[in-house]
Image 1: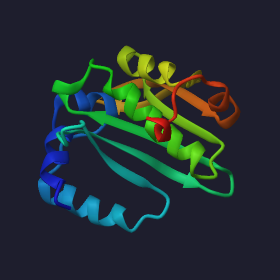
Image 2 (image 1 turned 135 degrees about the vertical axis):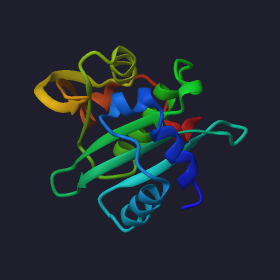
Image 3 (image 1 turned 180 degrees about the vertical axis):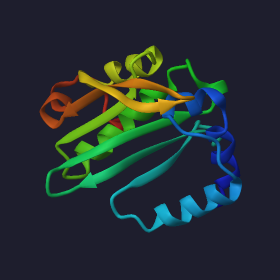
Image 4 (image 1 turned 45 degrees about the vertical axis):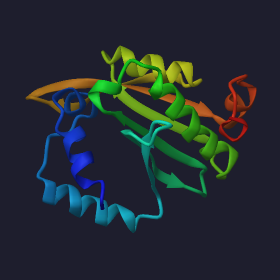
Length: 167
């Protein structure tokens, strides 16, 4: 709850709003969402921090289904921290948690088909573009397609990237 203002500011950024298909809401609504989500056992939310503890973003595992071993990943970085490699590091750490500590088998991510930076981060972390959800998102009165990416546990096991616990 202490991070509500910070998250609210990041979600109010116009680029983030476009990329996530969200619209800025009030700070009160953000606090209510945090309170609601804190009781949700099917998600894990993490504040992303630099080594000096500067908060730079938010990452989450959502829609966790332990029976099927599936979950979705979400990542949002503050505007001034995009394009510096943090997204890949953060996503790798979350994937390590999902496959190294949790009984998950399949992770998915969705982003607009024209969001090249997000596509690059997902690809660097081993995610495979598996298709397009046509007209799946409404933004400013226009229907947009979403690119669907996934990563399976066996694919992650074959990656040569360092594991979070070895860092």
